[in-house]
Length: 65
Image (cartoon, rainbow, N blue to C red; front, top):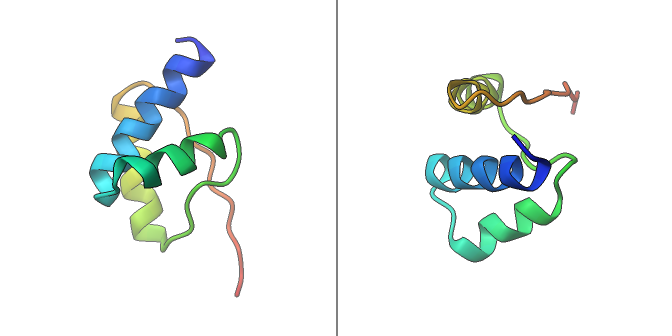
């Protein structure tokens, strides 16, 4: 899968999973590659599984607040 096509698929998945507007989703797409989401372990695991179901990989960085 080409980089742009992958970013489009990721954006579509994130938009649906996070109930984002088109404008919000496009803001996330402009951040790719890079950090586009901050959430709990459960939230990030869910998104990672949704992406994996489409054959995409996501890296998750743990942050301590």
